[in-house]
Image (cartoon, rainbow, N blue to C red; front, side, top):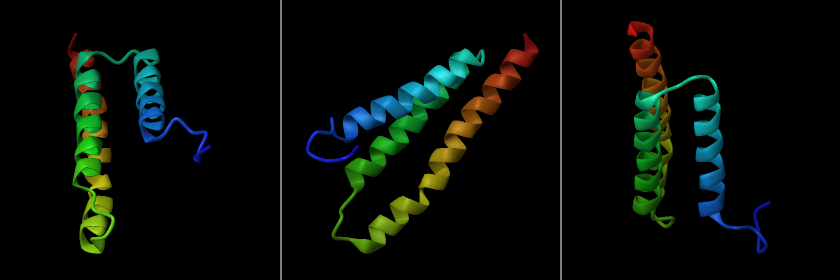
Length: 87
């Protein structure tokens, strides 16, 4: 769907983040999950702001930091499940 008629990466990010959030909340996730989702989105935004397509070393470092993005999202899910298990 990418191309001249696409809404651009902002629309794709909103759809991706929205669907991840909707899936989490449909599964019963709570506030801790939402905070993890915000941290995840912040990390992805940080990657985009830092991106310099002409710097291959930076591109590789940002690509490798996707692992951290996944860990942030997973930690939010795990902590949310832990908090909900206490209630």
